Length: 437
Ligand code: GLC
Image 1: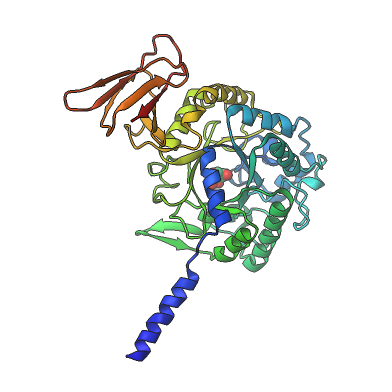
Image 2: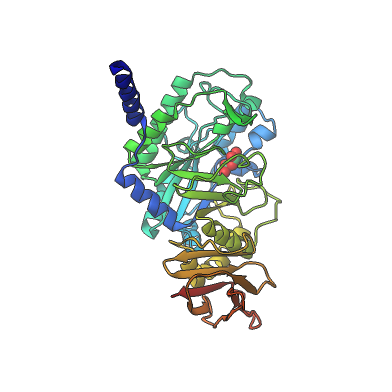
């Protein structure tokens, strides 16, 4: 009897010791991150010179050695970190997440721990992450780093289903590869102080079938995450699967959290309601790294609607831009971001620091809230009226951008009907600010 009680204690003690409890710095950083609501994602590397998107090496079935020689032709003479940051800030973004190293394995900073596949050995030589970090600091934007777990270049990387297209069935040496990653991550954090490390590529070693995840590699995330946490930096992982204890931010790739519409990405991914959530998406059609000739870009209206839907889902939006090989942001993207900024100037109050409003139709009408203020977003042209249940009385209701009064009625059944008029042609009047008593 005594023995079994002891065992129960020991087991309880063990699981207690294993449970992860985020420290205060961590909880504060999560909260700060979530309040920012809008970030710009940058996918950039030597693939920008090929101008065929960031998967060109793998999808084009190129010879890796031939591909990697492009580093000697990477000299983005128009790169101007301050100009980039001006565009991001103008758009209303509060943070930037850039690919420090994407799947092709090329590093955008002068890392000392790789085999010479980084910016320092290109004719450009300048420290791109360093310059961006300085410009972000000066402008008050937070910088974060995307970091690819998958690698299409190194000999010690154990190739999974995607990397093997480039590397063949290379067995690699994960202990050595992990050591390399940790050394690079230490450089990134110590030199540039990012808010988070944003992992990607775990999925190449995982598949979902018969209701469970099957993995072909143990990444030892405990060690990696503990290391990052020991440096007071947050962890995010774009793994398309349920969140782990030590992950601070949950990521959704090209899918509104909870929508689970995008088969292959977040289709099996439940939303972690106890962690900040971020949805990432593309501004240039279907591609993250720059693709020449792809002229379909999202409109500002589209980006604004995505921002509102994300915020209404308690999520941040990370909108991606792929700069070209000259170092410039595509002109169309700049134009769109400028317009998003004009909207944010007038309506940002309904996005930053808000939480889900829990009133709306899901897509065309959504809401955010802060305290007793509800922001109702009318996202579909032509839809100008919405009836809903509200406990409490409406003190005031007005369009946020113009201040124009919104119509408020009560139906006999007690619903509140709020209506706007776009007759005046004010396209910014999509948000009604409702103060509830
Ligand atoms: C995917 C792609 C990658 C891109 C990422 C951004 O996982 O592999 O190219 O960086 O999505 O979310």
